[in-house]
Amino acid sequence: MNFVNLTPHVLNIIEEDGTTVYTLPASGQIARVEVERTVDFVMDGIEVFSTVYGQVTGLPERQRDTAYIVSALVAQAAKRSDVYSPGELVRNGDGQVIGCRGLTYHVGM
Image (cartoon, rainbow, N blue to C red; front, side):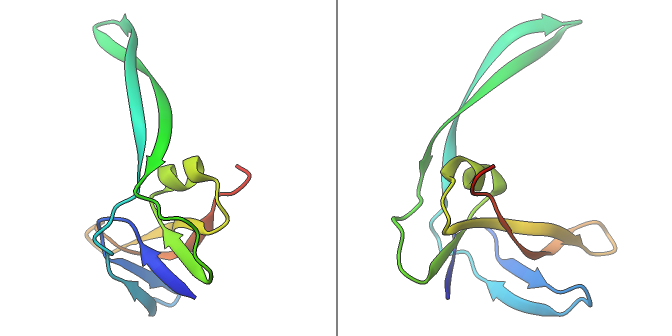
C-alpha cells in the first residue's frame, strides 16, 4: 500500500508498546476543506458562530493501492474509502503530540 500524507506534519504511527511502525513524511501537498463561518448572535459579549463546511481541495483522485492521510475534518467531508485520518493521538511526557495509534476510517459517518 502506498500512503500519501496530505497533512503539513510528519506522521508517526506508534503501537501500544511505544514502537514506531511507520513514519510518513509530509508530501508537500495539503488537503483542506473550505469553511464559511457566520456570526449568528452575541451572547454576553461573546460572538456565536455557525459553520458550514464546503468543498475539499488538495485531495488527489483515487489511485490503485493508495491511501491518503488527511485531517479528521477533511476525511469526514471527503467520505471516500481511500481517505483516512490519524488515529488516537500519542503524546510525550510534556503533552506534545509525537504520533498516533493507527488510522481512522470515516466513510459513512
